[in-house]
Image 1 (cartoon, helix red, strand yellow):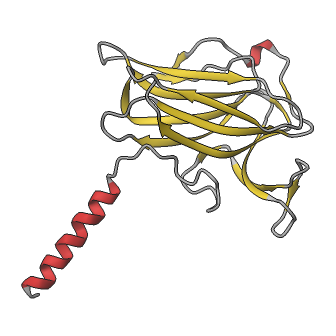
Image 2 (cartoon, one colour):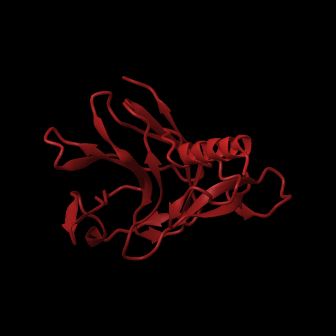
Length: 203
């Protein structure tokens, strides 16, 4: 192998390695145009028509969205793990949420809890008594040996898109492996998500 070819291959390897370990504050595929690439959890990609019903390719006005179907007895979520850029501050997360016509969250108090619980040495998410919430974290505490999460919850209006936002503060010390979680409680029906995004917007 000549020296020029060797140099080219090494350079390509370095670039690929850099891309693999790239740090970013962006949500991947926030418009779900490429199926569910970048997303984890319970969501699925569907097409939603302007009247709030699901459609198919070619239907007038149908747009790709994330569907989170509610289930009995447990909350569900869709999330992304972000490898944050250094010194990330004041991240503002935004998503538009639409409830299906048959959406109804659980009326059983046992399906909710107002605090985080430790289960098998991991943290179980808080389940607020609300239609939808965003969970962000981990956020490091002062001694760096513990962490906490930010929550923003909201109730929704039938037949309407609602923009929900949640942010980290500029003073927060964010873990470099950070999760943005979009969550629904137990119940019936589904919630649809579109325009999932994040921007650095120090307060």
